[in-house]
Image (cartoon, rainbow, N blue to C red):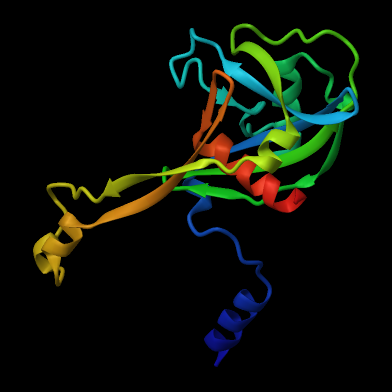
Length: 205
């Protein structure tokens, strides 16, 4: 009975979380909106070509959540300022978007806000090749292309596959991951960035 009381209290007093999140990489990004000629635009970065990971690709300001960050939002604001050169105080955070749990052991916390800044853009050139904007109306009025990426299971040599019923089914099965692609002028936006845009548009329509 004592065990049952202890177990019951442990379950009742905890909050549900994402299973295994303590072992996952965590990042935060910001979707920056700004007004140009009385119309909202979304600001993007082109990653520096000198980076080892995803050079030249399009993304939002953001990055890894450090142990010193007090919250995912604090990390997003810090990265926003470090990458764009725009003071984080110029960003009016509207709120959090849905959390993304990627199949690569990574959790991403997106936020959206409005930038009130009249100075020149001076991004950190070691991380950012350029900053540019796309009219929000473009995304509101254009659906992205949808393509599929297929992922399969690959077992380690030591995995006891012979003990699992339907072993061969697991070896040959693949998981379909829908991927969305936006084309704006000569810019291609896909992956996580396109996923967040599509989610954002669904909330703003």
